[in-house]
Length: 311
Length: 278
Image 1: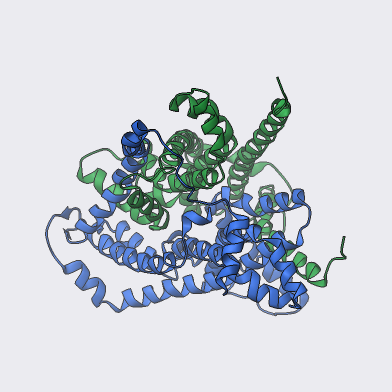
Image 2 (image 1 turned 180 degrees about the vertical axis):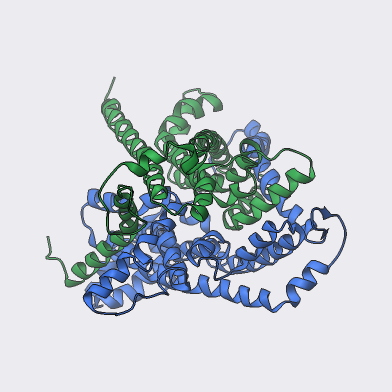
């Protein structure tokens, strides 16, 4: 990707992030850090109490032991030995990654297509806003209800099966529509595609339209423009969407439980199972594993995008 | 205007199907919630009735859903108010680099990407080990903030990235104190975005499941109650409940959009004499 293109789009489409600091009076300079700290204090406090401390607590408890009814402070590697020594863990981890990868591929393709249509094919701004809103409204409604609402569609006697039967496509109801990997992925795509649409649409709207004209004037076909101009410039949005989708799918337990009818497992389900059995130390060890895997994935992705610049 | 290329029609079809995919299931359960008393969880409709909505008002059929609705509502409002205030303060803080701002920003991102169940488990563990009672308004409230605050803050970043500092400089030159500048210049300008932050705060809290699962104590919020119902209720009453709570969410979104419109119109009127000589 030619760097000039990128910087041109950046300067034309986005307000500069780092403005040259306005000349400040001397008295302001001394209080700068203090003001910042005071304003950020509530945020820092909440995150310290309800994010950092809980994660630290999980890390500590993952070395504890458990009896049937209570958990006992200790320093034991038992939980990790059991976790890492068990074939189940690796199978489940693989399953988690599989769900994440398939969901990512589908939501990216679908989300990109939808965003592309909204950004480049809808011409009136009123329509653009209205259609974009239509895409985002489900985000503000309940995920659980949206999962439940697949039952009448996918069940043995659901709409999909009766339609296929009446069209003569099948002569036995399909069993794998509901409570299967298929329905789990379908629900993930249903729930999370808008996490792709929004950031991708956002970056597409900032692409300088003159670049597209230039590409077309220089003789590029629509597909070539898409491949060599739009796609590279949309990369930050794709990265942000990817971060959302991957973390949501990897940390999920409820969708897998509900949509697979408890027949499939991912790491979140392992944790939830242990919690149900009051085996908090073992749940904590699994949590630490999940955290490490998630942070590794995100760490790689964050190297490829500067989130603050893209807002 | 140029004629539409063929790709437009292909993409428009994809988009239409996407909307159908997005809304179809919800519309289906909305229809099925009017199922007759003999009807089941799928089509065909056996008559049409309000039977299942009436069932929602009977304790033995559905449990304590109204109590849980009340808790979700109060919690949503608490989370909303806190999210707005803390996000604005945080947004203002991040406009200038201060010592530790980089670390704090990374924590905000971490808060967004760390799986919800970990927050839920960790907060639950801390409260139990410290001997504090687990309650939706304390542990549940805090756990939900770790999800709503990053969204609120990212919106504030987006807002301040587009904010023209000339307004503040003008206020300062006019002799306003920093507080007056924020109160009378910055806040009115960013007010519509604050509505957005509020919407995020409320709806994300109202629908949150994972972070409340282990932090709400003995009394359920509405999503937990609904989840409990999925395991033991096999009648369309669950669709009726789903329809009602979705309608409620839509009303909240509608109220938000309406307020935004009214505010924009009032602003357009009030601002019409801007730039004219006195």
